[in-house]
Each structure stands twice: as structure tokens, then as C-alpha cells.
Length: 228
Image 1 (cartoon, rainbow, N blue to C red):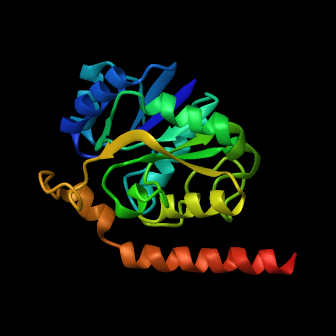
Image 2: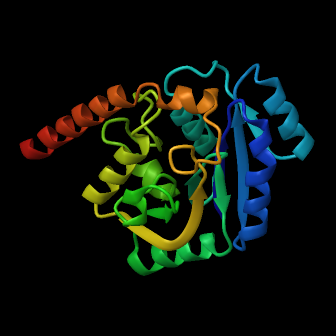
């Protein structure tokens, strides 16, 4: 079973599109859970209209909202694999089988999908959205310092959470890239047909600060490693 998490914020028009692409493209057993914010009435109304499973957070969407929503979804679900997604994705046919074939052939616990946009992703060096084996997250966590049960670190404002998850998986020998698992990312930085809305602006506002947090956390992890 693949659990698919879709954190959402103030983009009700995206819910049906990402849900349709997921339903039309996924062949293995899966569940999808949307995670909304309190007071985001238009978004919640749309999720109710679509009759999908969703929860909403107790706290308003402040710093670390995306990571908190992802972690909350992980703790609400129990499938063997967990896909950390978003509402601006387009799942394409075979995405799930391609990713699981790479997992089976490599034995790795973190499988990056190909978003067809980010140059580092297209080269196979990174992933903006990925599959995590549940036992991997439950046993040691997928971050450097946050402990078991954590998919993404909530210390970041928004960006670099994926970079940390990939870096940690590579250090542990648990990273593999599924080049043919296409989960397209329609983000305004790469797709000029997408409008830069308030949700994107919020997500991009503290990229430089998040980059510094990443460097600090990586240095701390390296220091601990050298002491062993």
C-alpha cells in the first residue's frame, strides 16, 4: 500500500487536478490524504465536494507548515510506503510501478521521482517529491536530528526539507532515483503557465534563510559523524 500525502493551502482549484491524475495513473493499491489548514474554508469546501479523505491542522499555516502537514499525514496513515506530495503535481501512468521497481532492485528506502522540471532532479541527483519506506521513517527518521517518525524537519520555514531528506538518505546508502517515475511538478519557477500566487510567495520568502539552516544542520551531522 502506498500512502499519498497532499498538503494544501489556499489553492482549491488544484485539488481536483492532482486527484484526477493520481487516480488515472496509479495501478498499485494506494490511499490519498489531503492535509488542510484551519480557516481555509474554500479549500476545505472543495475537498468535501470531491469526497476525499482529509484532515486539517490545529494551528494556522506558519513557519514549517508544509513539513508539519507531511509529518502529521505520516502519523495518520500506516501503509508500507509513504509518498510526500503536493497539490501542484501531475502523476503520470506508471509512476508507482516504476518507483517500486527501483525500490525492489536497489533495496533502498527512499526513492526519488522525476519531476521533469528541476535540473538537479532531471539529472538524478535530487528529488522534490519522493517515496519513503515506512519502517525507514519509523526506525530512525528521515532527517539528521529530529528522531524517529519524522519525514521532514520542521525547523525550516518551507524550502530545503527535501534536500535534507535526500542528503540523509544518500549518507545512509538508502537513496535511489526512479528516472522513469514521472511525477511532474507544475511550479512557477519552471512552468511559466503557472501563476505565482500567495502560497508560492510564502513558500519562497525565506529560501536564503532555509539554505543557511540546511548548512548548519549538515555541519552538525558531520561533526557528530567525525566524533564516532
